[in-house]
Amino acid sequence: MNETISELDFIDQAALLNRQKLPERLFHAKGAGAYGYFRPYMSLKEYTKADFLQSSEKETPVFVRFSTMNGQRGSSDTARDTRGFCIKFHTNQGDYDFLGSHLPVEFVSEPEVYFSYLESIKPQIENNIIDKSKFWEFIAKTPRSVHKLLWLYSDYGTLKSYRKMAGFSVFPYEWINENGDKYLVKYYFKPLAGIKNITRQEAEFLSGFDVDAARRDLFETLDDEKTVEYELFVQLLPINTRAISFNPLDLTCIWTEEEAPKMAVGKLVLQRNCRDYEKEVEQISFSPGNVVPGIRLSNMPLLRILNFACKDSERYRLGSARQDEEEIRKSQIDKEENWNCYSTESYSNISVDSSLKRCFLQAGVFFRTMDNTMQQHLIDNIMDDMMFLDDHIQQAVVMHLQKVDDTLGKQIAKGLTF
Image 1 (cartoon, rainbow, N blue to C red):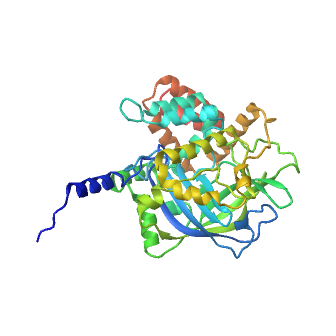
Image 2 (spheres, rainbow, N blue to C red):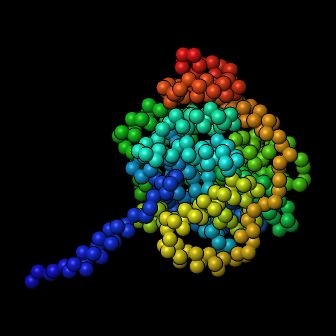
Image 3 (cartoon, rainbow, N blue to C red):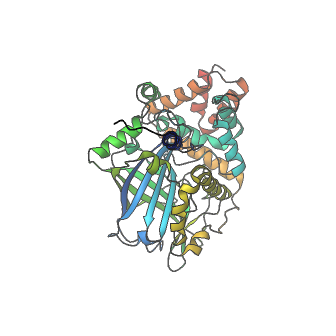
């Protein structure tokens, strides 16, 4: 006897089909995820009272999401882009979210300028096509963006493996110990497999050959029961114990080794894949405001706005799907302290001009530490992208680059024939 399917059954199936995928993230839409743990090498109680950093015997479960920033679902993993490196630490005191990038600096630090940058890389309203001239016009109008520009247009901007990609906090956090001593801290996750980049030409080839190259590489590695490991280094700046001669909240600059030496403090190990991509990778959300006692956010207007933006995106995309998790978070230990998550320290005494000089100086050092091959790749990549831009944009960008390094600026000017 043949079983019949009622019209209501068809409606139920159609409803389930419509809900299999969530609304896409505006940025970092395409990602990959994996589970593992984090273990510190030693107790870090001298610097923070965060529970998961108190003992070398303590393993904290984690979930890591890697992503491309500007790529939509179906885009290529190898396209030139900033990669996201986000970690959810499931601690005894609640979830701590680390939001990082594979590059150590950002284009700007100010909210109004940062949102101008985001507008410059979004697809146009009328046709959903990205107009790259808008990005370069932003660079032309924003001299401090050149440091991040050099990182992005070097071979660091193209890669095919998340296993061989670094992770930087970019934004400083604040650590607080039991005595109330405070430290500004930046994180650096170094892949133990080494950092491996690819050229523009290989990236373009892979874009046509396998758009999922990076997440396929991660999935297949873990599926073969191999682990993916990163060593965590931190840089610490004591607050109120010595004068800080630069603005440590300036995202266009790094903290140098002389200013804040890197210290190896732990290991991040990824062990297994997700089994339901939509539920485990797409339904997860991260927000910089998800901190635990002993860790706070540095006092930056941009960070406050991004915290709101992440929370608002979560409400828009996930809606009631996050209700259970929100109920769990209500019971977290020291909830009141978690909400008071921002530092009150200010570094406004550092002038804008000195920050710009520091940005140009560091960008120049970065360029001159490259070998000749990587320098030429950078120059070729910039010229290839700027070739058909309006003259006024080309000239303004070259002027910025000449302040970074005269040879760099002159070679690009020569290649653009002016």
